[in-house]
Amino acid sequence: MRLYVLALSALAFMLSSCTELQLATHFTKEALDEPAPYNAPAITGARKVGKPYQVEGLWYYPLEDSTGYSAKGIASWYGKEFHGKKTANGETYNMYDLTAAHPTLPLPTYVRVTNLNNGKSIIVKVNDRGPFLRGRVIDMSYRSAQLLGYVEQGTAPVLLEALPADGTIMLANQRPEEVPFKKYGHTTKQAAAEAQLTRPARFTERVSQQPVTQTVTEEEAPPLPSTQIATVEKVRIFVQTGSFGDKSNAEHQRSKLAHMFTNSYVSPAEVKGKTFYRVRIGPVENVEMADQVLARAVHEGYKQAIIVVD
Image: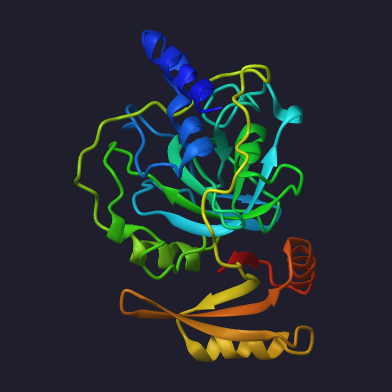
């Protein structure tokens, strides 16, 4: 298997005059053999952001800058029904490419995605908008979901880490694995406010740039990994109905939830000296149950409810 992947890497290098054929071999190898790196090629040219938009009653606030973005949540995947169609930034979706859709990150953004169930990690290029199913933080291409090992299950809890857009490496002391993780997405104004407080300084260490994505067909796709890459702790899944700067507001919402969800509670979180009070339900046993709890919460009027992962 290793020789096969190395051969793909050599082929991509020899065809360096063709940009598309240069992409993804390196990171496909990483997905098969070892954890993905913490850097990607520099993004050149204008990035597509867009204005705030609403889908099924939920507002999304696109980010002008992906620096420091990280989030935990539930990943889904999309395949044949979108194969060959245009993505949000005008590219053509190929279900065998290492790409993904995200509701708010600038397009494009390179993101390191780790499956929290098995420790496998890859780097994908975010070039599309979505997913718009409540409770999902990213929609991976079919091939990306294969490499992360959750195609059959359909969903998986994941950690997203946006890699520096200028091609530098994410420093170890700035990674969510080494620091308290406090950010879950940007689907509400409150979440966007929290994200602004948690955004670190720009990274400065330079590294060599490596290719990231490749347009391939099913026959050309490298074999899937056969072993797990890392041991991960059991994840916990919650439904979060609100996040408040005022504790009394959080307690008021929790008290209203209590007659429906006896396992609701207020979870304080310190973000750069500011305390946020998050109202949560859970933990719940699995994604299917989280979807049911989320649907009920939204039906009862908690329109900003989301699924979060610890």
